[in-house]
Image 1 (cartoon, rainbow, N blue to C red):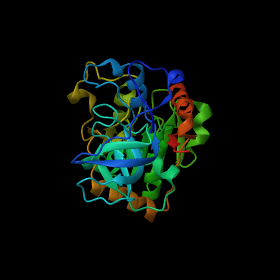
Image 2: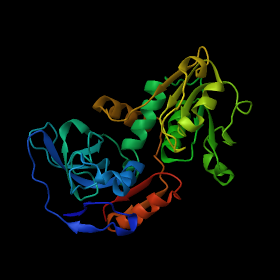
Image 3: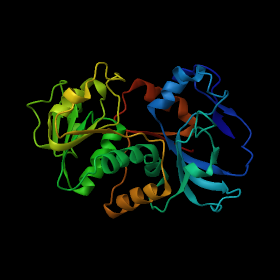
Length: 316
């Protein structure tokens, strides 16, 4: 089969397909014929730096998510040809991931799906919509009555969160730091140019999805209504920790701070996501679509950060 195999630091321009054996099935694992996958920033980090970490078993096929069908169910309850999605659980790091025509995956991170979505639309779902769903509904406990602030909304996760929140029926205020990207937030009720300080600019915020991260988190906390919840899910601002953070002084009284970690998907949550998409007629959006034969170009697009939305790859 064809696959991307990493043995060391690999800039996007050096990504290439090579021939490797189709994985041999073993108990507790299923063989998935990959029809497509979404691309993620963590895969860029793997290629450009993390690949040298001692816990990465090299060579490794990258890719933390995929969509496809069961090619060999092994000892699981799946059946041949069944549509599935898979994500996280060590994909593309602890074991080979999805940048391949077939992937051998642990059964506990493979999930059956019942959907009429095309393979390309389906490829935009697993990691991105799972993270958006968990952030909005598990952490923020979003309701139709809420006014939701999505800070740093012009990214794949931001677009997914807008689609889900508008499907629910709540008011959405979305921000971007680039004026040229304001038109990309047309599905939100209000698009706001973000200069790093929203205090005095946005009002009546009951829930906030913070995708810029620690760089703007303190400011986001200050715009919340009493009883409001902030979920820090992203780190687009390039600041990863809150140095000198004082939770007593920096979190306003009656405001709540949480975060979402996307490493624990379940069949029930995936069922809920696809039922919601179907009920509300939501077709997941994506920013660019490449055939697998052009996966190098997809990696170049990922590294350039110029694509507006999710980058997906489907098999030729």
